[in-house]
Every structure is written in structure tokens, then in C-alpha cells.
Length: 596
Ligand code: C2E
Ligand code: MG
Ligand code: MG
Image (cartoon, rainbow, N blue to C red):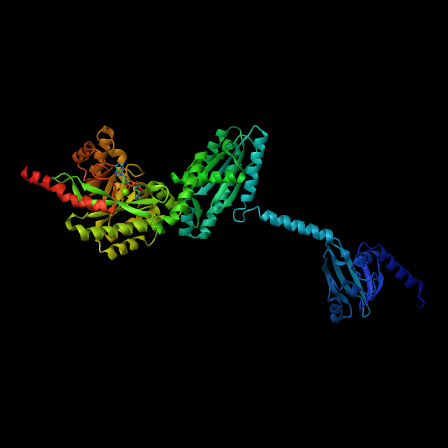
């Protein structure tokens, strides 16, 4: 060792002192990694990585966890400077007996053309904290809906669960779970695009939050109120602080009012009401998941009866939903399995001099021959078919079958064939853009004149919707006639009849059944017949069951009638016989009329 001046010796001592006490690992090496000086911290960090218990060469020691350090240094051409800085080195558990994952932070400084300084620190704890923060952030993201910044389904389920636990433990407050679904969201998406749809959802979420914040107005206690987005256009509110169960009513009504106001999107006012299904604490059974499911069943019930309202869940609803589910799965095979068929109910003319005119027309009514339940009436499956999207193919089947059958009867029966064939349409069929064209195709392919086909829509359907209205005009342009079914049960009034592009008004059975017993009903029937006639529309009285009812309708000037008095809906063979019997039935009447 060369003699050193006292100053230099002091400086070296100072450096060695510093290195020993530094709270990070420090080592000085030659350029090839040979360790010249190392402090205790660096030694304790590196020792577990040493294969033979010695710490002679830094690069050799780190080879297993940070290969390439030697090459990196060799490639570093500058006389001095940072070779690498704050490199994270991960030491997996198991390596050299290391029990757990460790993370080092390493910096390598070239001091001059002969020496390197390595700085090493154990950042395992900091790394773990970073990881935890990241995981927390990610799990928070998994609990927040990114579009509305509302809690998501997982959070809603937790809240429902907690509310149920609290209720089990006993407490003064009551809880209720409100499940909301937009009434016209699909329409907004389809008509205005998904961006507009998203904007509506964002605005709706803001309003929902705002409405719940005003808890003084909607609830008197100050507990938890959670609003979450649990699906595309589905939201859940958990009210956990109701003083009395009945307090849910003003809250639900308030939410309906607030959320049904139009949403300003892209300079337009979009309407998107909501339907709400509510599970009260007393009806909350099973787990949180089933409570949400029951609330959503009640929402579906609210929609079924017209939407824009709230419905409180009852257990019978779940049973009905289960039944509908079973019908849906069976219905999917019914069409392909040939289980659906059509029956025909005669519509007779009431005005002729010789009793009834049997060849006036028919109404096609669908039936389902279920393999175990027998023949199922349409009211039990048309609604389900509409909900599950099967009404399109079923409607096409009925239309095609009925029009082909009319063509067949024209061929077989000649002048005794029915003059018109009426087919019922549902909302889903009318919503299909190409529907009118398809009707045209069916008529052409069977050689049936359009005016022979009458399409029936229910009153509520025809009155409500712009899409439906424009589809009705397209159908009219084809030349088919349109009938308003079940008149008197829905929305439109006599005063609005003239706004609808219809040819025939079918007066609902609920009026006809009391035609001869209630003055009130008789007056309504008379008014309907008069208004219809003044608008150039004809009338059909539905559900005539007795001679007395038929007599009243005739007296009031009704054009046509349909009902069990004349005939029940008939299978094809029976309907054919019914028409063939027309001559036999009418000939004596005609003879009597001409004799009279
Ligand atoms: P709707 O169009 O008003 O059909 C008349 C319903 O009244 C038929 O019931 C018929 O059997 C029944 N009816 C007729 N005369 C009498 C009577 O004198 N007394 C009684 N008590 N009932 C009578 P159905 O066949 O059960 O059909 C019920 C409803 O289902 C139909 O009412 C119609 O809205 C719907 N529907 C039937 N077939 C189809 C279809 O192919 N497509 C669509 N979308 N709906 C259909
Ligand atoms: Mg009908
Ligand atoms: Mg009807």
C-alpha cells in the first residue's frame, strides 16, 4: 500500500464511515464487478444471492436476478456517469432459499475509468404498498360504473345484504329495494344512437343522485340511501332508513316524477320514463341476489301494465314469472315442432234482409297444441312471445297460414268463400321496418287482393306510438284494411278515432255482453257506431253470445258481428263446413224474404 497523506487518509476514512452508516447498500467495484468495498447493508442484501457464501463480484452475484449488468457497463463508453438508475430487481421466493418475494432498487454509477459505485436498497415494502394501492384502485374500479360514476351491482348487492342483516338483527328502520328500468331506452338507442343513449343514462344518474340527496323531502330520517347502476338501463336504489314501510310510496312517486321529465340531449328533448319494482323488507327473502331478482320481476310487471309506474313485489309475481319462463322455453320449440295452428272465427254481416251474411269474413286466431298441457289459448302465450322476441316468427306464421287458407277457400268455395280474412298484429310486428313489404309479398305469392286482408291492431297500440302510426300508413298504402280491435278498453276515445287510419272499429266484448242489460253500455255502443259511421268506418260487435245482444246491435245499426252465437273459432275443416252450410241456412231465409 502506498503512503497516503493524512488528509487523504481522513477522506478515505470519512468515505468508509459514510458507507458503513448509510441507510442504503453501497459498494465500490472495479469495472469488471470485482468488489473492493461494501457496506454492511449491501452485504446483507446481496449475501442471500451469493451461490458460495462469498461476495467477490457484483455481476456474478446478481447474474441470476439481473443478467446483463456486465454488458451494460462494458457498453457504457463515457468516462463517468450513471450506467443505470433505479432499476427494479425482483427476487422471486425460493431463489437461494429466499422465503418471500423481494424487490431491490439498484443504481450503478461509473466513477472513473476504473471504478463503479453500486447503490442498492430493499424496496419490497414500498413495492408492496404500491401494489396494494393499485389493487385497491382496481377493485374500486370494479365497484364503480364508469359511465355514471355510480356504484355497480356488486355494491348494490352488498347494501341489500347489509340491510337484510340489520333487519334480522332488529331495528327501528325499514328498508326497501327499488329496481328501475327505463321504459324507452332501446328506442332512444335505436333512433338517436348509442352516444345519445349514454348521455341520457348519465343525466338520469345525476337526477337520481340529486333526488336522493334531497332526503328531507323524501325521507325523514338520515340513514343510508344507495343508488347504483346494475345493468344497461337498470338502476337500484336501496332505502335503508324508512321510518314506516309506507314511506316508500312518496319516494317512489318522486323518483318517477323526477326521472320522467325529458332529457336534453343534442338539442333535443328525449323522453325516457322509468318503471320501478319494489321489494319491501317484509317480502325480502332468500339472499340479496334474489331480492334484486324479485324487484326486477316487479319492474317487469310495472312495464307490462303500461310502464311509468311503480309496482310493489308480491310472491305471486315470482310464480307467474317462473310460469312465463317455462312457457318461453316450450314456445321456442312450438313453432319448429308444428305445435302452433290457426283457427278461424266467422264474422257475420248483420244487415242483410236474410238474417246473417255468413260469407262476410273470418278472424284468424292462433292456438298452441302443447304436448302436455293440451290446447293453450293465445292470451297465455302471446304476451310471452312479445317479451321474448318470438312474436315476429309466430305472427308471420299466422299471417302466412291465414292468407294461404283464404286462397284455398276461394278456390274451393267460390262465391261462398269468406270475403275478408282478419289477422291480429302485435306491437313487435308493427315495429319491424320491413313489415309492410312482407305483408305485400305474402299477398302476392298467394294471389290475394289486398282489400281482402284486414289487419287488427289493439286500440292502445294504434293510439300510442309514432312508429306504429307510420307503419299503419304503409300498410294502408298496400291496400289492406285496418281494424281497431277491442275498442273501448284502451286509451283512445271516440273523439280521437278520426286520427287513426282505420276502416273498421271492433267494439269490445265487455260492452257487447251488457248491450241488452245496461242502458249505459247500450248508449256507448250506439255512440261508437254513430261516430264510426260518420267517419266512414264500419263496425264489428265482438263476442255476441245471445240473440238478445244480436238484436240490440242490429237495432243500433251495427254492421257486423262475431261471437259464440254465430260460431266459435273453428279448425279449417269445420270452418269449411260452416261456409258450405251457408247456402242451406240462407236459402230459406232468402225465400222467406222474397215471399214477404
Ligand atoms: P281478439 O282479437 O279480440 O279475438 C277475439 C277473442 O274473443 C278470441 O279469443 C275469441 O275466441 C274470443 N271470442 C269470440 N267470440 C266470443 C264470445 O262470444 N264469447 C267469448 N267469451 N269469447 C269470444 P282468443 O282466440 O282466445 O284470442 C284472444 C286474443 O289473443 C285475441 O283477441 C287477440 O288479441 C290475441 N290473438 C289471437 N290470435 C292472435 C295472433 O295470431 N296474433 C296476435 N298478435 N294476437 C292474437
Ligand atoms: Mg282480434
Ligand atoms: Mg278483440
